[in-house]
Image 1 (cartoon, rainbow, N blue to C red):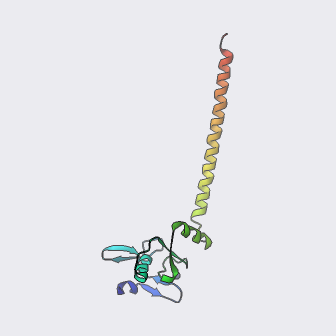
Image 2: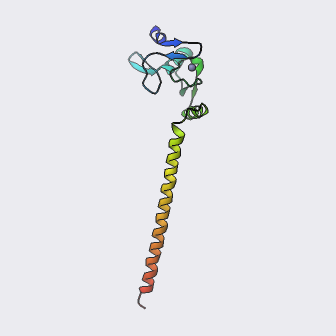
Image 3: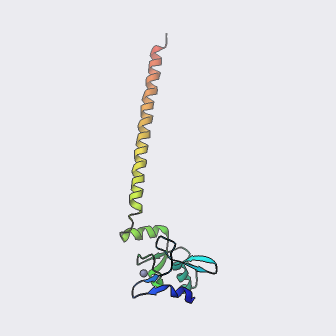
Length: 133
Ligand SMILES: [Zn+2]
């Protein structure tokens, strides 16, 4: 396990994972041919079991593997944490845009059916008028 701890730079605050990550700021660690997220791996080393859910950071530092900065949570919790930390620029705007687009789309569709309904009614009316008695 020395290989693992060699890659951890301990400071008074966060313990930074020094080895290469998989992108997104998370570290990873190869062990017996399998690749693990470093913060999941350290959870296992510290508590002797694999985390059941997601591992989240209280310090908002994705490269951090300090066990007491980590806690188990859900993706939704993760999302709210990010928001709380003012770090959620990723999601809300995207969701908002999508919501706006959906609204506009629904409105257009409604208008279309409305127009179409009027159109059909007009045809029917004109036909009625034109029916020879
Ligand atoms: Zn930390």
